[in-house]
Image (cartoon, rainbow, N blue to C red; front, side):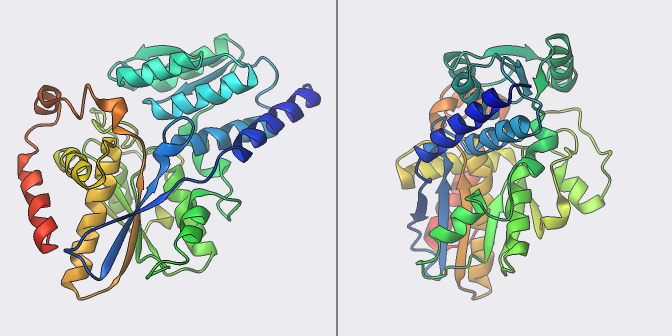
Length: 352
């Protein structure tokens, strides 16, 4: 192994990080909830446009530090899109070949972004992404990044500018600086593990609520404790939800989970656009709908406090899916009942 090259590679990633400012914390204006403040951590402003930029950076540093990635090592990842976009960015930074093994249904905009960074997209049936990734890594003498296994251990959850550290630092001057809840949806489970561990390590009273979409088994696993649970269907909310229990999902750091219908997730991003003037991905809708449920419940109990959730990526990646009326009708169903609920919530603060 060339230590000189590894030292150079780590220095390139550190320099890239130094050039990047932290992402914004957006406070939503919700007059219907005068005693509950709601915030979105806007991860769409990373260089590769999503929360997964943090994960990709951590996974590359983890692979380099473990001796798994050296000069010329082909990097292979199984991903529904955003992680692969970010990993393609870092692979190009280091001059490494990159192959993304993705479901056929991955948004075309994400495929184009991966290819823009020099990556190769290998499209397969969703059930085959793991075995295909392992096969490609074996045949090419490469490294299978395996975000679903290593996401929870690649990030320093004690601090070191991880996402939890950033959130709580940015909240320091707010009316309710220690959030009542942080709301997060699981893809690998790595971000929820980082946030949950950080909350406990810092002895905070904040609760972590994890929200799960349809066709995902994390919610059932959390409630039943059966790691063998699986689903024959894939999540329709790109980037979150899994048909099997992933090793990076750590239920012990989660205080509660909510199941969010896909129609609610998609309706919420359309509703949010009228507030922010921006399009966001449907995983943001899952997060926000869960946060709004908690906020409504807090208000009903007469509680005051703050809730923080994540804006995971931009909706510009999904113009041909979540923002296409025909696609939504075919793949998600009728979102109007949830639009009605959200519009009522905006007036009354009640969401049920």
